[in-house]
Image 1 (cartoon, one colour):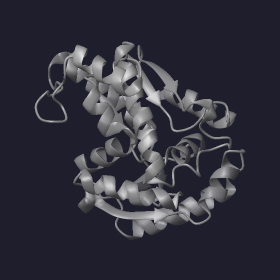
Image 2 (tube, rainbow, N blue to C red):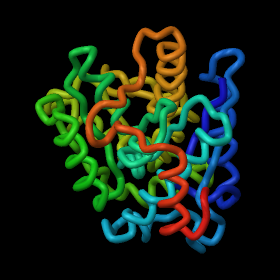
Image 3 (cartoon, rainbow, N blue to C red):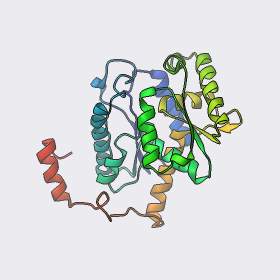
Image 4 (cartoon, one colour):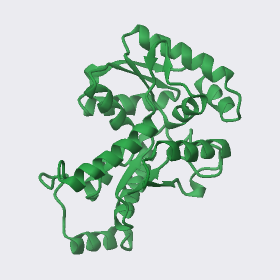
Length: 266
């Protein structure tokens, strides 16, 4: 099995983060599963992280298109599944509409899995601008009643920055405080709102806070993608082709429209 794991960062900017991802995904993948990590084009941003770019819906439209095209390319290259490892699930809806392989998102998978187990979940976010789109997604997924709290972490940017340099003290302090607020509001499971804090939690070995489990969204994403592929192969659950978003055009019609609007077939 081969999974295209798409990240919302540029490879090489933060070597420690890149190393965590490689070790983490190798740890959670089943024997025989190959995970290929894909990232943003190198010239997407000049800073260490794309913090300034994810504040705007007008720019997310472009990210959506990029990631959705990644899903298309994943299928054409013979991958068995495509996943987007960003909390706001950019490109997930459009990528799913354009492909036949399983396509899963970080946020959607974590929220639905929590709800399936009957839990009310608390989201711990460190980027204020993303709270709007992530809570909109939760509402669109029909899971607002399962959201106990969305806690913005005080001084989250600086805490994450220090952690990415190997200093975890501030990160532990502020995320622990946010977790307590979420638990006090009724959260029965905690979900890191963004992928980077989730990797920091994994590097720290943090599995629970204040007696409440902390979900590992990247690990869950990989294992759920494996499950989706297996279920499809067994015929237990296969992709629907009914309705506006799941009906598939012919390859010839797809190629024609891509040539018109993209200048070339992907």
